[in-house]
Image (tube, rainbow, N blue to C red; front, side, top):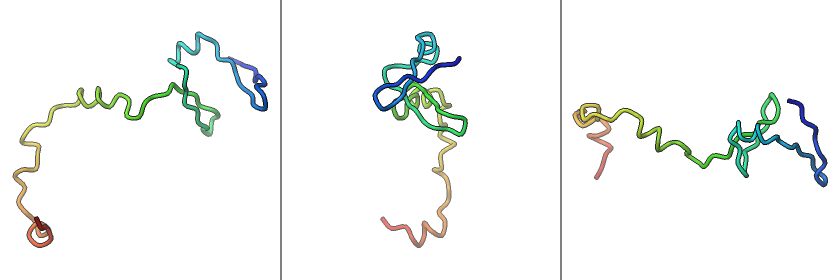
Length: 82
């Protein structure tokens, strides 16, 4: 799709057609960054967006996977203080 830059004061902007906004999931706020290929526009996402769902979908940790039975090493014997 080819869009023309429109003057907005001393700046320039583009009008993004509604079907593209809906298809890309853009809201009132977007994230913009420059890449080697050009300008990248993406929907704004809160920090750590989707982490909760990803964590919930990960496999549960089994007790035998933890490091409870690891014998002490030289650091534990000499350096570690309580």
